[in-house]
Image (cartoon, rainbow, N blue to C red; front, top):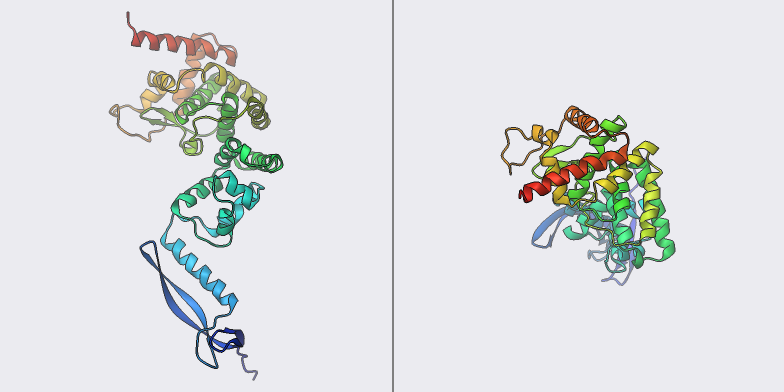
Length: 344
């Protein structure tokens, strides 16, 4: 019967000052980092000649990986190494340009790729980039001057492709509105999307996207994009906004794009809190908030049947034939809002 072979390992022993045969042993290690202790199983080499520790490089690397895994297990907020490795590939950007884009030290991302564990602050940024191509896109166009023209354009193309392949119609509609307006608070964007969906029921007539919105304290909210589009403005030139608008527009049907163009002109012209007040006077949001106090949080869904009925009624009342007629309703709502503020 064939006897099992024992794997022989060699390492440099500092005590013997030469490379020697070592015996591998497993031990439980504990390392304290930022007031927390992390336990993991490590494998060490022991010199067979003198008994001093001499660990082969391959085992030292495995021990480092085991330590990093222990840290990640104990800290749910730490992004995985797999995700860290994926980000430069997803967005077709080098590790150094990516560090520069994020305002970090030139070699910061390189260290993360090599296994260094990011702090919570760094990890949160990486999580957002990994999970949201839109958040990366906003970062890319805001900080375009930090990259070479070649690196910027290459990453922009990759990001647009990723959005086209993986994002929903709601997200693409939001991106198109942002590109058309250039300035958009999360509060305003939510209301613009709400009116886009409402008028799509009346004018197309079909839903612009399948997502439902919720009746939050300050009006309708599509929760899927609340965090993704947490941006106040894009400080970039008009040519880039036009390029982005063209990219997002190519992902939309012609009638959807026509409707969103009208929203960008006739709805986005009003301040976020004005739009918020408009929605508070309308049936769909009010129905979803029945029985709730004014400042009581809610995740109640605004029913699409309510939106369809309400906006179809608006279409008839204001004799709307096409999306450009949205201005009639919005102007009437604004006049009503002014009268509330100045009854005299």
